Length: 301
Figure 1: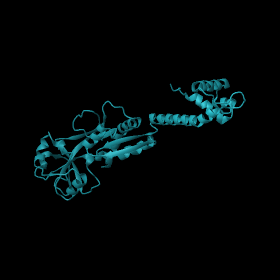
Figure 2: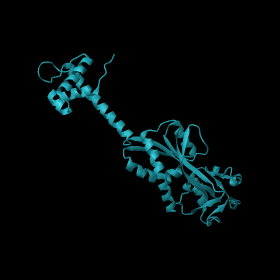
Figure 3: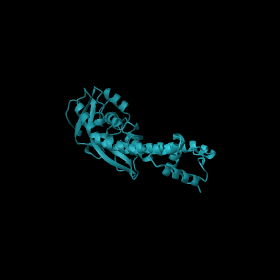
Figure 4: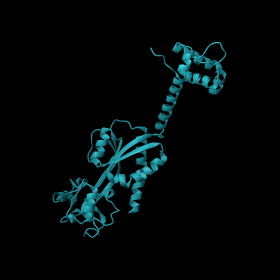
């Protein structure tokens, strides 16, 4: 049966060797000399071999003690390093968080959120990925990432969803399009205009505007390609406001007033699985700061 090595006796041996004797080790460790001697004696009994030579009045190591010393030092150093790392992780001073978001959130909201997060938690490494909503859910379910920010179209087994915000749907068209100057639009006003469907067009399904999808002959899932088609005047599309790229000066976003449709965006994580301390800190930070970032986006329009 292997002897159980307690750390305190090992620290005593190291202090005796480093400080040059039992008296000096006792002062260094703020313990009495009898306590130091008893700890070493108990360790020697557990190991079945003396560590220090007996009866010469000096703290001289035996050959066995010389073999033990570097190994004791390594063991104590490893313990202290693991303890520091564990404490740092538990107190959110270290660690890594993997998070996936839909592109609109990644580009619009995450820069501000992450800028404040790295100030509050400078020791936490962040791995941010983006992808469409289904891909974000898959990455969370597989454990590839701990957190996702996405629009969950329907309840999904194995995922917990925490609602964060509602993102209104509007019509996007070129600035010289007949609809571009409107403040609000009714879905019937879109009839007769070429509608380009995209990945978020499913939000129209189940609403009175669903029939618009039946007459759409063009589907583009890639946002860069979709933007190019809109700027070329090929047609119009519907998008959540956050997905509308305002830096494209030739495009306009007109809210859809009837029906009023919204995309629900929230945080997802695996159901029944605890988050790492770093991921828990990120979840808390996102929930605390997202509303502020949405407000900044609104005021910048």
